[in-house]
Length: 126
Image 1 (cartoon, rainbow, N blue to C red):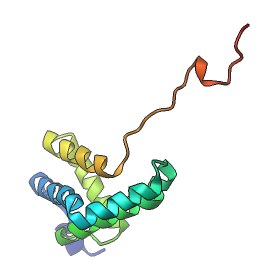
Image 2 (image 1 turned 30 degrees about the vertical axis):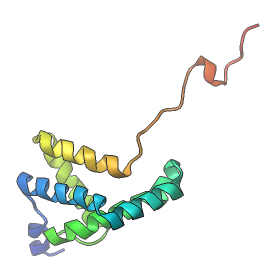
Image 3 (image 1 turned 180 degrees about the vertical axis):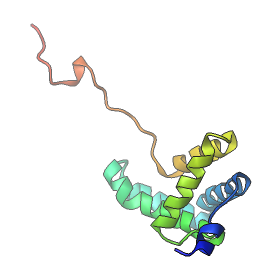
Image 4 (image 1 turned 90 degrees about the vertical axis):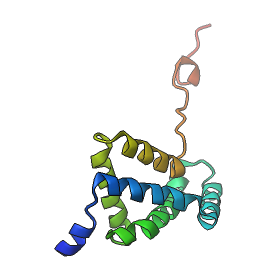
């Protein structure tokens, strides 16, 4: 990686907010909304299938936006952008909020299966 690429991909907190907002907006573009809906339908709320179908589409949508800001147009570029955003989350509540909105667009709400005495595995006393 050249130093020019590294420098162009270094965003200030304000720039990171702009890029996050653009990425979130890209998910609501009609063609991307259709792509995400199809991926979610294929995944059927199965976490393994979410990784197989939804995550690649979400990654592509992000790549289309962040490449204009100096990030490489591959999975590594998305990871670098995610690390940069993460580094600003603790300092800036707006970035933390935008980051949460972005994650909610492609990660399903996690529902934990019941774990208790009634969930099996224990022998009922008679």
